[in-house]
Amino acid sequence: MISNKLKKIATMRAKLVALEKSVAIERSKELADLPARYGFENAEGFVKAVKAAGSGKRRRRSKAGLSGAGNRRRKRAHITDETRAEVKKMVGEGKTGNEIAKATGISLPSVQNIKASLGLVKKRK
Image 1 (tube, rainbow, N blue to C red):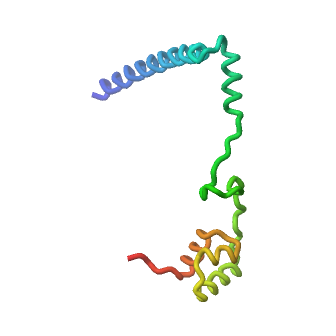
Image 2 (spheres, rainbow, N blue to C red):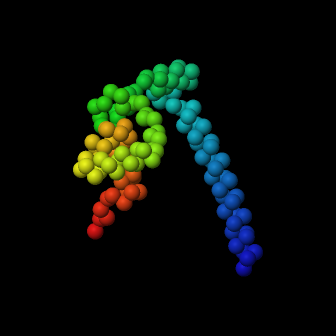
């Protein structure tokens, strides 16, 4: 029984090798035909055109969509005990998460994480 399964594995491996070879040959043919398919006489002209098309700088929009500074990453916030105390105090004063984030210079998710770690958020039902 095991010998039959081992023979099947060997047969399947041989088929896989043959399939990989045929894919490699077919891929090479398709790549060789690409320049002509797009109207180029040779591969060098085609490669230059692809590089020129890819070198154009594209501006990525920030998540907000309108922010001009959206392309720069923010520096990672250093949350200190003083920051936690300030967040706790501002929550006690009834400030919103956005107000706290702006006042302390940290992100809203950081404020939410601090509030959660201090047990200042209500659990969902």
